[in-house]
Structure formats: structure tokens, C-alpha cells
Image 1 (cartoon, rainbow over the protein chains, first blue to last red):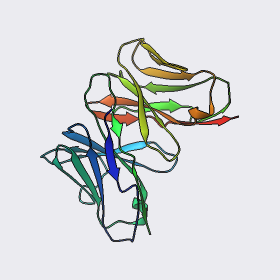
Image 2 (image 1 turned 135 degrees about the horizontal axis):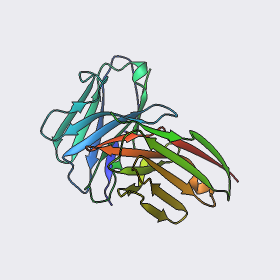
Image 3 (image 1 turned 90 degrees about the horizontal axis):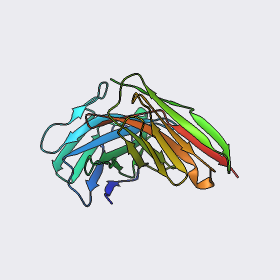
Image 4 (image 1 turned 180 degrees about the horizontal axis):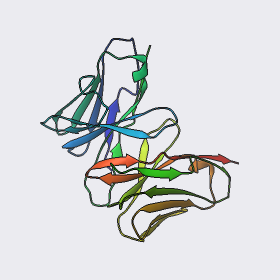
Length: 116
Length: 109
């Protein structure tokens, strides 16, 4: 089945630094990938849609200058959390879809970010 | 945008019992998907429902899509400890998933 590889799985960084999270589709091409954030005991909230070769589209309330998304190839999307603050600590997950024929979205394993 | 409401938020189940989680939307949905997220893990796709009144089964799991395509349910029979996790419904809108709040299931042996 479709696999989306995400790393790092865990990262601890100091306030004010930037963190890059990578998401790769291993056995399929993903022109579109999605980035979610999940706080403890809460649901997944869509942050942005990453489009290969073009600018990402951000959901309302998500700062595009803080959460930089790059989708430089058909298999790689990156999310960079810039100038991280403790309130950015969360579980970040990417997803992609192989096709729309009855198959859902495949999620990466997630990145737990802790900003100290 | 559309909102998907999901209840209950928590479900404590004795092993062997049945339970149901429900999702409701104020708008008609083109489809609804269900995902399971184990503690510490990521969401895993279970099923997609598209047709009005559709019912699909996966072993002990039964998924339903309402006639008006505004609600859906997941019913699990004879709950096992492996059913522990959070079950999310999600509405797919133009390629974006709107997740329900999720039902966290705890199973008591």
C-alpha cells in the first residue's frame, strides 16, 4: 500500500530556532500533500495544502510566514516552523492520497515537536 | 466551512460489549471517511462511504452513511482490547479533510 514517510518523529528545539519536517511519498507521486496539527487529546486541524511546483494554500488563522511549506518535487514536501515558541509544541502530521477511487488519505507517522 | 460533529467524545467499553460512535453534519456530504488513531500513532484509513444509505462492514466494524448524507455511524461489536484508540470521522471537501472531534475508546478487560 501507499506509504508516506515523515521525519523526524520527535524533535526538541529551543525557542527562537527553526525546525524542518520532511514528508515523502515513497511509492507514489503526490502533487498535493496536506499538513495537520494535533494538540493532545484533540482532533486534527488542517494547516495548509502543499502543492508541487506552486505556493501552498493556508487555512484561515495559520501564519504562512511562520509555517513555511515547500513542495519542490512530486515526492517531497517540507514544513519549516520558524522562530518556534513553546505554544508551537504539537504533533504535526502530513498526508497524501494515491487516488480518489475509494481509498482514503495516507498519513505520515507524525512529528512531535517540543519547544523549550 | 462545513463542520462535522462527533459523539461521544469518550467511550469506556467492557471487553465483549458493543458500542457506536456518531457523526453529524449540517450540510450534505459528498462522502465521509473513517480513521483510527492508536495512542501515540497516526490516523489510519478505515473506510470511505459515498452513497446515500450505504452500509459497509469490516469484520466486527459496521459503517453507515445516512440517507440524507448528513450523518454517519461506526458500530463495533464484541469489542476487543485491540480496538483501543481514537476513531475519527472526516468529511472530504474539495480534497481537504474536515475531521470530527473523535471518539476515544478505552477497553476494560
